[in-house]
Length: 276
Image 1 (cartoon, rainbow, N blue to C red):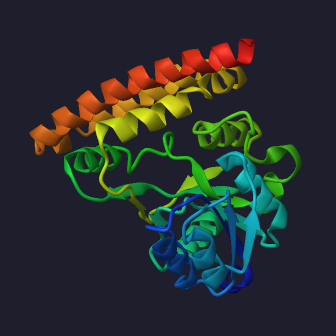
Image 2 (cartoon, one colour):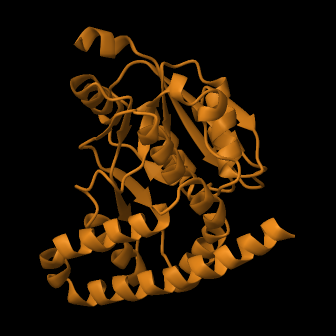
């Protein structure tokens, strides 16, 4: 079984746009994987900085595609030749044994997909609040979205929904579960380099993601509320962790409240766009 895992080709798909600050560390971490059979495909959406040049130096293939992340991922999947696809954002860094351990988790459980929990790295108060939030989710399999997936499940209509930018990861998770696919939660922590977060940057991103919430809610009745309940349960389960960092916990909860407002605002815009 170990030998069979050793031979399985994994295609890592990285969508990106103007991410010269983080792209090299991301791609270099893929190149450092202990698993010997890795194909690296980068899909760039019109970068005007050094992102494309860095990708050409480190990736097996660099493709131009857009206009959104879902379309970029689907283009990368269409170019993949691996039995498995691992999608990765260009501000993430994989520990060296990530792919090896994720394949082992899939083999041991018979899973079709493996979710990998994230931890936030970066500087500043709000980034520390985000890091504390992510710590509350580490052991919750119902919150994490799959990252390593059998390629056959992503072809045809199985890829990322083009109508969504933000909720497309959760949409894929729910579609896989509805189809009977098993998703295993891996033990490897992926570093998500969020830099120095500000309230403004967080609000802008959540507003943008919120514009896709109507499409997500239409596709999965009750899923938005269910996600909210799962998050609240994670906070309650980790109350001791939050109590050890009271200042960051207060900041985290305040930021989450602002994010909820940005989601609602974005969803209203999304409904207007769909109607018009």
